[in-house]
Length: 430
Ligand code: CMP
Image (cartoon, rainbow, N blue to C red; front, side, top):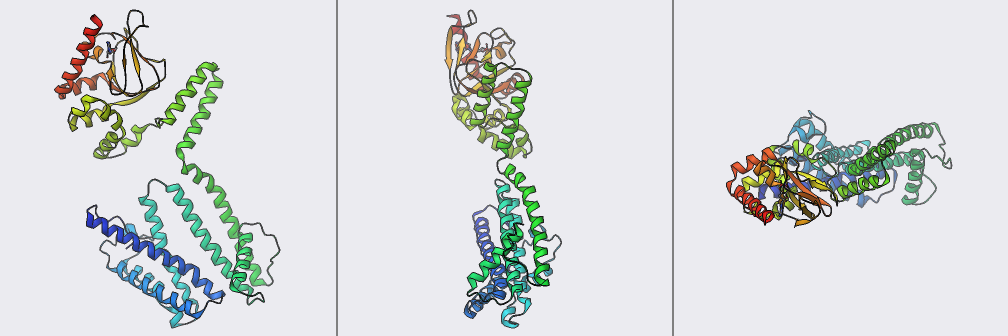
């Protein structure tokens, strides 16, 4: 029942998946309640009606769950906590957790077997971590806190049991006192105001302290890693920032250039352009890679009128081939007279096309959805004008050989680019 990967994406499959999730969530809540109440019932005076009600609920729920798990079609090995645990062993574990030992053998330690149902919680946590790819570090932290809270509760119950009947009245006070001792001992603070009074208590306190040291070490060792994983982008950015400032100091970069470098990186981070997507996309299968790329470049693909009319095949091809580049205000994207190896599409920002004669007169201003740099590629001639960024420009670059291939394969797009180039040429000649 714990497996959540088997159901398809059809509506009935989705409904089945939703039903499983709700059931698994409910069983996890019951298992957690059992893990809290069963040890507590040993050391605190719970009313018998509460005990019997809980016993019935756990028995029925865990019994149904044992049956459902036994009958599940996709009792796959990946749904198991312990690899190799057979269907029969799983049934035995489930039945032991479901057995009403409180009613059958009241007061016996066998009742503790209910806690075996936590195996289902561990399975669910494992599946959740496998399926959830967005917040794995946060989940790790939450699961750790969950197990820590249960451990603290069990140790507190153990301490209350060892202390024996106390003169202080009420369950609540006894429990809070036990929890207080447990937290101070586990956290290795140990105020010393509650001290063990006999050998059994001393041994228990020693074991708890040693456990506390281990847990404490684990927390110290892991918190930094967990925090780093919560926002790896930020950590990467800080790391790169440090590298950059070391480099600038070491190479004595002048303040004006430093400011420009800083402004460039701020722009990249604001626009989330600072990570190399090609590597991440490269790990995806081709079909998925194309769909993700189309999604990432949707702003440009929607902004360029000629792309909107071109077919899906063209969009896929061009989306995969175009590479994002950023230019800062005042930067030259193209210098007149240079050899042309690529053309550009404007995703965001504005550029000025400057006269090749004086390099200052603005011939034209191009904005979002426009393209430039096509003339040198079409005519196999040097760049006919300079192009300068007016503000921050997010462009997509298309290399010459891909440009030629795409033109050959898509004649309508080729005709449009040629017509645009012709119009610009005649504008320059006027
Ligand atoms: P290319 O000659 O490769 O490099 C400079 C680019 O500026 C050129 O291609 C055209 O894309 C673009 N360009 C040239 N003249 C004009 C114009 N009058 N209007 C708009 N764009 C132009």
